[in-house]
Length: 116
Length: 95
Image 1 (cartoon, rainbow over the protein chains, first blue to last red):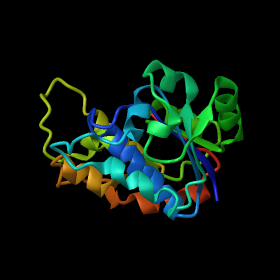
Image 2: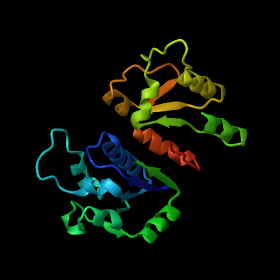
Image 3: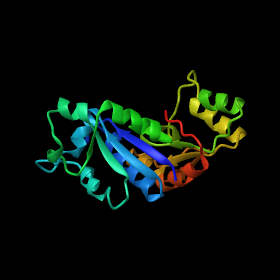
């Protein structure tokens, strides 16, 4: 088992980056790795429930599977959330807020860091 | 490829190279390069074959981009295989 920190930085529908990163997170969790997710920058928008159905498949709904896949924890960059004037209760799933020192600790604790 | 060569020269072993997201473009067999442009993917394939390094690509990522025919030297894989192979690696380097 590898302790993996996967950092999401892109918004949900800005190309395929976010969707493929989420697929990768689920696949790594399914192969018995300990996966921690950190959403920062525009990626915090991935966690917002959509007001209306997009023209493309809404892969963000699969965030509800994180618990089922034993994703260890989902962190959100505190500063990024503030920048978009969002708060935790607005997000689709329970998350942990990560101030810069927490993010630094996450990086230190991880064996593997993936950035998307 | 320069990083891989340097890693091997330093005594490391490379378990595999995995192509995901936009990097799957490298596997496309239909790219027709002008004669005066270097075939960098070809060099990578030769390098990998010489050092016995599997070049794996995510089939789903490739197919979604329309790259259904892989160039010789690349092997179809999935995210699950990537996850399982991670057990063999003490480091992962992302480009």
